[in-house]
Length: 274
Length: 193
Image 1 (cartoon, each protein chain N blue to C red):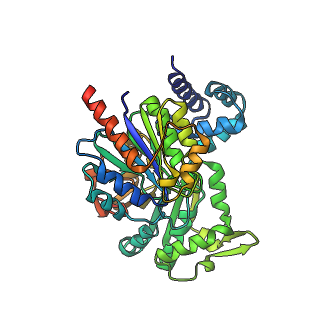
Image 2 (cartoon, rainbow over the protein chains, first blue to last red):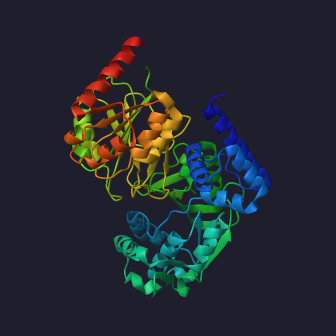
Image 3 (cartoon, one colour):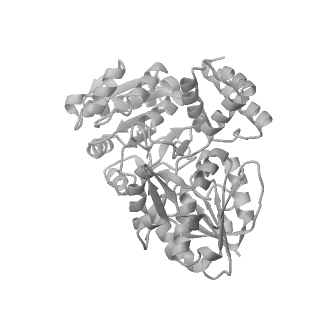
């Protein structure tokens, strides 16, 4: 057995173990992503092999949760891809305005930056009061961070630029209070956000919503899993509901390519057919 | 020797270098080329059109889960890392920047080295960042062929110098000679087949 084949086998065993013991299923995640994260963890922890890592995951719950953190995607920013948010504001807000109440599902919200971005846009468009945003992630640690709404002050310059490019109407600093090197998001923005633990891989539909944002999550999944999650998103949307994907994600290789109209090709905004 | 892919890392000065590369690669050049060029996160795809203008092989932005094809060059999209899967498909990720860069050359090189082992050619060209040095080392360790642009020939010498300082590379050549070598390798592969 070559070292590469052995390592692949060990990684597959590790993922099986994590699934059986902790219920988190990474077996259909991108193998290149998982392999990269495992290698980083091996270097950081001084563990010599993936097989040894598997033993540590079994014996040490704290270490196991560290590995879950490694696999989770925690990189995000406010108004990431400002052009997308500009399009949302111009093209999608008028559709949402026709509903008496609005439900938004932010699937894979990580530490919440994009959920706050959405809340800000809805607030500026006068729709926030009749909206509920379900912001979900499987990673409880980042979800707690999202709920706290405390972010590094260093990032605010970049976020302010994004906000302006996204068609922001006010001064971005109106939405947070700075405190030394951190900022805390306004309580008002949190009012209608429901933060909930939900795993796209293993959990099912929990609400019928008007808008789904699931951006830069599916790129980490293999094709089969992408398709499975697309079904979950599809089943969660009302007819005529809006699906927003990451700027490099699409529906072409899923069963749902024909199930949506493409509203904005560049920014990957789709509308579920009636 | 059969090579299944060429990976290229390039930063400042890259547009000119890549323009030259694609103007010289002949029609029928078969080894897929996969490129990380450091870019502004808000860069649009226009620079890819510039590369395509004078290219006889097809240059495109990498799509996630795309199958890597012969006779095609793929470039990482701005603000995404580009990785290679064992199934020889492309993956994108928004993970943290590596060496202040996303896409990062090291991320591409390390995943490519793992997949292609000794069937890989890794090339570091002009740039003012040390990204790519660790990745090229990994390619060398896994038996791949390593090539660096002669720092004296590069618009920015720092990236080639860093790669040379980190790894005992197989070739240090001017860009024109690198291209000539790639053409010769590809031609020989096709003759043998």
